[in-house]
Length: 275
Figure (cartoon, rainbow, N blue to C red):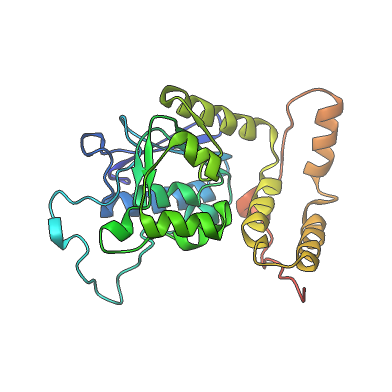
């Protein structure tokens, strides 16, 4: 099987990636990490995929590392050459399509680090969420020291990381961990509707360059952002999609995009000068 501990379906331009160990509340496994990275890479290259939704099978999203077989050895020292604290490669923020996390239930440890890599995050109101790593003798992983401060700021990140406390869905939304919280039964339908709307109406190349700039812009000054926006406008202006978007609006119809991310994404990617 190409994917283990993960299922992937594609319909109407939306790839649904489901962490699939429901009997273990989707506890994170090495096979799950490898499969999720492979699925992200596959979807990044697939022109038929316009948006991705990441969710969990059953009532939980992911309850963190799988302790069931290894117990106290779960966090044994690893080989320096083969170990990464970010076991999903590429991470969701490097996928050139919008990635929506439909966090349908409890998400702790790496189970919360992974949706923080996503662009839009919908959490179940009933779920419990926490970076429990420091309560297990390790520290947050999977780029969490990058993604979480971007989402909620330094002070809130420090409190959550250094205390390891859990929060509910409504507090997660108030903090900025979640874009919004909904009843658990509504999380996946809401995420899929956002993804379908993107697939129908958003120019794929525009979304791809916009997403990358969004993730990179926090480390730039305003002058650098202006340089990047200008350079990337030169990528999309004068192209067929720039005309099609206006015509589709005026003619009140669904746009027919012709630019494709794998073929037309700017390579090399422009880099800003001074601030």
